[in-house]
Image (tube, rainbow, N blue to C red; front, side, top):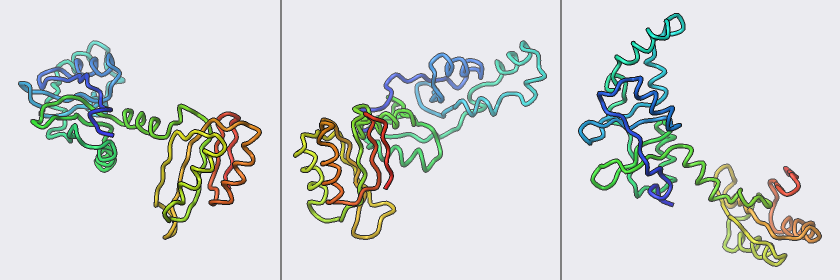
Length: 225
């Protein structure tokens, strides 16, 4: 899953000579949290809602409205922007993008093509959409979490059991984080198993691997083992 497939292609930008007021209005009107800052068509910085709040007069609560508006109309974006912003190549995977945003402690970044031209932007909100798509939570159904032996076929055994009962799998995810050597955590989201067969399926799955938890969205049933 590449950044280019999940980024927002409509990029709202600011010019270095725009006022702080103009930048604030643009963020509000477009319901976004950052603006790439351009100078003669080139990316030179980025300004966020946090930058704008930080640059607002500290005694704003004591100022008359017209005084406050006058002050923020005089401050230029180039005075408060972050120069040399973090950018993400369009062909990075979303996992690489998430890693960079987390490492840099930023909420989003402009996306650039091979020539460095801004062609989009990706934010934490976009990455949340990726998570929802990958896990298939929109299908609801049931999510099983297991601790399984890290050996060939261990995940397939669970999947084959679900298929035997007529279940359809939306997603299968696994991780080696926080597990003993020789094991892995597996998360399977499925639907399509009739209620009268579900208890038998759950029992057989428990014989193949150790349950960690079960979430049944159809009945809002949650079990932690």
